[in-house]
Image (cartoon, rainbow, N blue to C red):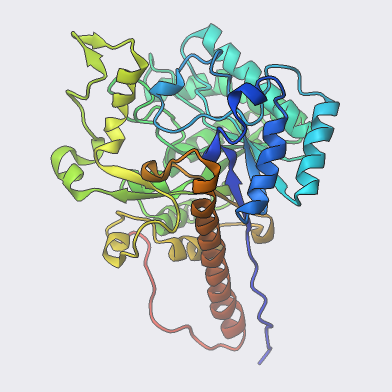
Length: 413
């Protein structure tokens, strides 16, 4: 019998800088925007990360969606109000090198299919600046949403995708970049009743979009930045989702991961189901959508009445919840990724995304041990999965020794 050595392969562990958007106070970074990157590089090393996903966003004075209307924090750690030139990039790269921190990609999460051409063009121009910055910072990807044209059906949005989004992918291709799409459905993004406001929300949609990309020569530019919290929100589990991609021949589509969980509230599901609260949310006043951003945030009750974001490691171990797809089974998540997807494991990023509401403190000293614990948990879970995979699928398999038991099965809970 051939003997296969035990050589587990681990993923790269990072953190999204939106976790602490005010690490560098606004009055400081507005005057010296690159201070934010320098201080986040130091903070990332302090909390045990190896990489950062650099958050970019339209400045609060420029955005069409006020920060107060958003469920999650919006951070412009990468400030692009002024041109990001070679000197700024050199300063940022020096800060990362000094702290021994890598850059996984740059994330800008906005609606690229907005129905208003002026608003959409503003967002596209900003995304192009993000891509140009990615080149100067010597990373190979950007991360974001596709979005949705609210005035048209989902099928009509496929036409809009081909007309409006494909040119962004061509811009990325010219610069040697990949666009990784996070699959959040963004149910509370507007005060309307649509639940799916980002059309790239599930594998069936990813495949439809990728086929359009292939027709336009940009199939290699579209990849998915998978976040299991959004799968839980829609009643899915990671293993089944990955199995479906493999079955359909699209196991290559996932190119990175947000490590964020979701804890389903059974009482909220009993009240409203998985569509969330559909009426009397507080985002409409006197028969019309409120213009007050503080009211508009209530649109997110389409999500928050039935679930709460989990920072990895903060939710109690709950085997029954895993089997009911009501919480992320992190160990099986990492096993399934190795078993079912086409991944270059050592070059795949696990990016911790912190959106657990009760731990959304913005004081560095308070947040540091919270993030450090979550990052450590993520690293150890990945290491455990890597060891199980190497032992079962390589060492034992090479000697025709079967693994014990059955494990979790796709399409069954």
